Length: 251
Image (tube, rainbow, N blue to C red; front, side):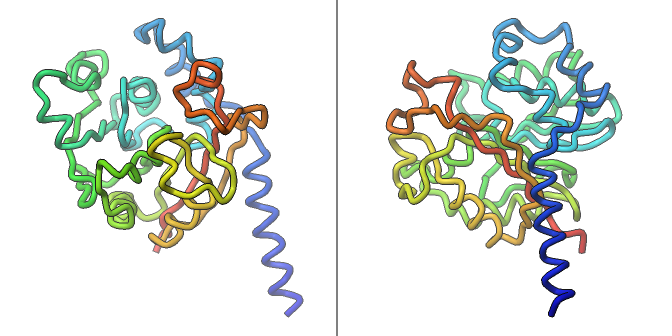
């Protein structure tokens, strides 16, 4: 009994240490963030988004395969490309609807066509049956997990999470960064506030088979006004954000 309690305490301490410690970003990550090809509109957001710390927390390394799930304008996609290098691969995962919209092509399509970022491949996917060209070492989603619950998308979120689980290599990581809602906030609030209770994310991903192995508090902001949606100018760019690191078991 004592041994069991001791092991549990050690495990809790290890997770707490991983949460508290902020390892110095690797040279490869620092070089990726310093990439001269990054647009000024991206670099101007670095102080708020802290990309070097985020990639270090995610464990991104040269030669890896990283999937940027719902990459938006490609802020992180571009950095991933340089961080994994020519021997690595980056999949920019967009929806089939985005890919089909010829009037408004996704921003990452132009990025993938740039020879300076030749390791980026756009993947149009049904999120509930996500299939990547090859299994990923890291799947990353930034400020988008709550979107999976939007009523207008009518997604089976449990199926999406299981598809993400299956798309990872054994031992691979799923990094979820999102806008925090107060504890106990109902899930349907994502439709207006675009925030999510972190406890919901933990519960859903553990149900999919993931294990929570780390947390970064680099982007936490207790001064956030949680009554405002994330696009309100009073809080935009400065919301309270949580970052969780989930692992697919190695066996």
